[in-house]
Image (cartoon, rainbow, N blue to C red; front, side):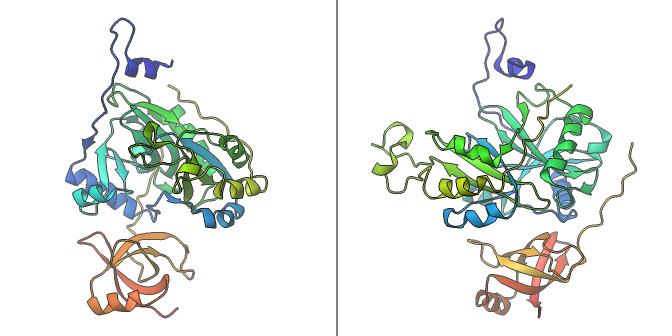
Length: 360
């Protein structure tokens, strides 16, 4: 057992063990707005991962090389935003319906107490997931480092080097400071390791991490069930007795296994947790006047906005944009999945508004 685990679990002398979920402290409105403004200024995709559909699994997995990481919890990843004169803020955009109602469309923002260097605090964003029940935080990736968007420029393997610098030179792990949360670093494996997961019987979330810059992850669940009375232990019964049980081997696992040999990569080097630069802050990304709009399911008149292929940096997410005009809303609903639109940035709401159609 590591020193962090000993602190969180208690010592033999005290016989104390933390058994309650940790309640994270919410950020103030000012702290939250500062973190959101910084993310909006970085041209960063705010969607970390998307669900992999079985019938469409083979195409994206053959387009590049991937690593695999697995989780036994259902916690969604979020961003840790480090800024000068602001505490580290953990921001999670992928929310449940109830959480969206509570936050009125804004992300959930919690304060983390972490000791980091001035280089990190000058403007950095890490990807992490927090399991408050089991008192664990897992650092998964580095998107922004010292005000530089390395996510759109560097591969996942290259970003791992920044993660190694973070844990070795720029951060002092302290489980007490984090309120009893043990921090770990993911150690992903090559895509070929997927075969070893086929015989698992318990729930597991599998994440495919592309080794390409600027690309989202894909995720799906093994042995995902819905517990019902009479279904046995937590609803986990044999797939033959439940039609909606997600099979481990059909059809997604076979598709992944088929391309694993093609898209495999060498194992990444492990990152161990161990005990001045002139920076220029990026100008807020408010100058775009046209974009590609993709409809957001379940959210009327809300679209994901991407830079067009004619821009300086194509296919970069600008954030979500809304439609205020009723006639334009009806027109957009009659068009296809990718729509060329005119946009303007609204400083009051810190986001873009779709104001018309653009001829491609």
